[in-house]
Image (cartoon, rainbow, N blue to C red; front, side):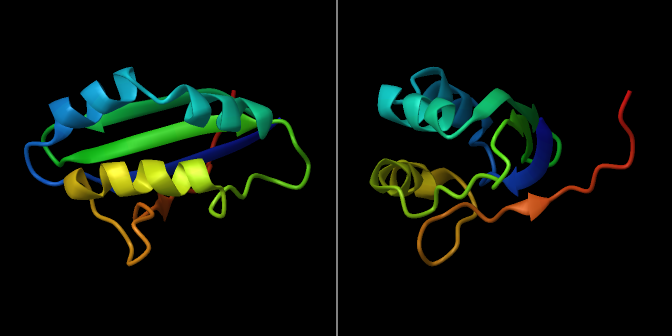
Length: 102
């Protein structure tokens, strides 16, 4: 099992909306993540900085690369108005380096 952690920035005041949208995560997105080997995916929010921190595990050796999946691109379009995004509407992701594991 491999670990991935990253952070993203929400637009000011969008923490509740981000949570609301993830509480209603599209079943197709959920299934895509599961089918790709992603497990134990959690996202945390820091309201002081508008930063969300995500961490997940994946079981596939080749890693996870879903950027070309149609449903994920639609999800990014849906989320683009509440967070920092790249020109293709993918979230601006800042990778985190693992420095410890128990």
